[in-house]
Length: 312
Image (cartoon, rainbow, N blue to C red; front, side, top):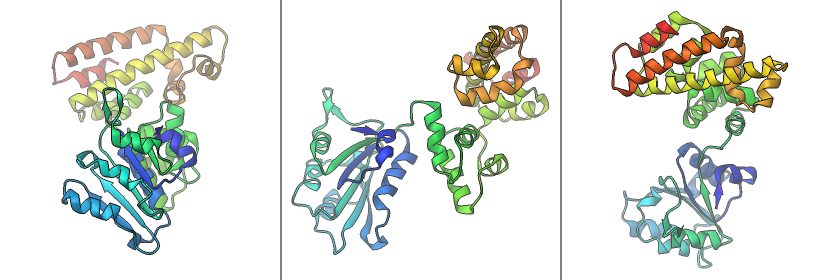
């Protein structure tokens, strides 16, 4: 078994691959790697649950045409005749027949803690592989991944795209838009291709003290987005306090970021405004957040975001 991050280091292509996980955009990358270079007439997309399963397996297990076949089976979690997965990876199927099973399940199916039989067969087979498509665990690794989707982009650009987009899926779409348009990475082009995430946008505006724009953004928030704003701001105040403590002990702000192991993206959002957040203001802002969170958790809808901005 491998996570996407492990697979992405070498991008091995095997005859039979089972993909699952919570990040569809990464599954799309695995599929693209398996189809890359194959002529369109050798590529087949099959949708479990939309065609009779027997017909689907007939196509997967049939001898491939001259030159080979690349099949992608979407909705693999709906398959019932899972013993056929072992047949697809077996010696009776030609080496030029490749199949990627794409499951919407968040993780690999298990029976009593062990891998389900059809997955265990693939794990043990030289012709098979299992890939769980989840986001990299560290913020830096996520930024590096996003930067890899935009030719010439730096890790800092990757951080900016991810921050403005709010998810790997939207970040990929932004990078794909930039790539297709032939745009060079930069702050202007990042802003042009990214769909702003309301919660991150409001947190940025409040930290910067741009209240008139923050008020306009606050009026557009859904309840879920307001909860995200409260969490983002609480974390940024915590980071501001960490960095300030390091500065008080004689470090530069950037030395404090490294010493406290602060996430580089969060640091980039806090450092430009650090002097505006002395201890007294951090305490005051925390009190405002506490009031907003109490109202939010109690189901109050009207005026909570606007009060947060006004009192910040």
